[in-house]
Structure formats: structure tokens, C-alpha cells
Image 1 (tube, rainbow, N blue to C red):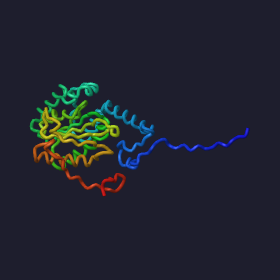
Image 2: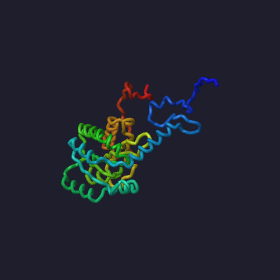
Image 3: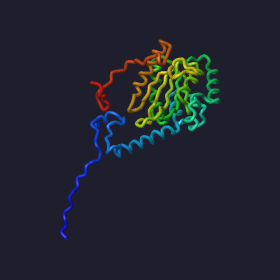
Length: 276
């Protein structure tokens, strides 16, 4: 029987590309993924599952507390290591109320510190907590803290010892700020992970922090990370809030964040396509 030469087959991709696909190089958001029939392409689906797993891991990951404490002390800053009333990660995730208050030992530690420093007045109580992403704190808290230390020092704002809190949520800064008799408080903590940002750091600022403050009394600066808001812009915005809060004696919904941002350079790798 005669042998027939093999006929090469032309196999085309089953993926229908999205016309906005070129925009994907400008953002890490899940846009222009294309489709295969009526479903996501296999590659996009696998990437989604990987991102979802990374977000779940970030929520359950424990903060390397001793390493971070060592790094903070290396900056020459006094440190108070505290713990919320949530005894472990499971309690923290199931009982948000426990993450908003100090446990008995930490409350006593702060009271003892305040009694020993009765003549000390702080403009700013600085708190770092793991929040919902210890990964974000481990990656970004220290660089932001360094810039806050430098900028506040140059502008004459006095800082409290750094309160490093395990299993802490936003409102725990109210308790700490009140016990330290600070005029304002700032807490850095990991935000709820997104599917493209398991390491996003959040900053919450409150004037006259007291137990019982609501979220309406705070200002938030979010998405602090390499692909989000940069460290210098974060601290620039924070200092703007501190100045205005000091002048107007308020924060939250009554204090609009209208900080004038420095002019951004459009040269180099991080060019903003929205700028002319």
C-alpha cells in the first residue's frame, strides 16, 4: 500500500481574545481575560485559583512578630508588644469584637507604662497590627514606619512607643491611643486580601482616639504596596491629614483628604498612562 505523506494540521487557539487586552500591561486587575466558548480560558482560570489560594493563605498566615519587633528596635524606637483579646487566629477571624480590644495583660502593661510617663504628651500614637494579612505587614509596615519617623521628626510631631499588636483590628488603636493620652493615632495593618493583592497594607488615622470611636471618625489610606500607593505618597497624605486634623481638631467624614500630591514623573517604567 502506498504511503501518504503526513499532512500538517493547522491548530488555532480556542481562546477568543478581548479587544482590551493591551490594557492588561497597565494594571494587575483581572480585565480582558478573553474567553473559550462561554467560559474563561484555562490559563485565566488557573491563575484565578492560584490568586484565591494566595488570598486565603494571607488571611491565615501568622505574623513573624519577633523578627518585626527586632527590626523596629533597630530603628531606635521604643516598642510595646501587645495582644488583643483574641487568643488565636481562629478566634480573631470568628470574633471581630475581640480583635478590637486589648487582653487584660496588655491593658495592664499600657496602664503601667502610662503611670511611669505621666508627664509625656504624644501627638501621635503609632500602632502596627497583623490585621487580615500578615504578609502585607511583613512587606510594607517597616518602610512606611521609617518614613513616618523621619517626616514627623522633621515637622516636630512627637511619637509614642510603637505598639505592636498580635491579632489586632482597626479599632484597637482607639484603646491604645486613649491609654497613652495621644492626640491622634495611626494604625498600620494588613487589609482584607484581594484576588490580585494579598499583601495590601492599610492605614487608619483618628483624631482624639477613644474607645467607642466609629469608622466615621477615621480617615483611611489603603492599597499601600508595590503595585498600589507608594510609601512616599502614603506618608505625604498622612502628614497632610495630621496637619489639618491638628488645625480643625477632627478626623473622619468631617476632614476631607484634599492633600496636594507632588507632581509625578512620567518617565521610566512606572509611567502613568492617564497623565499627558
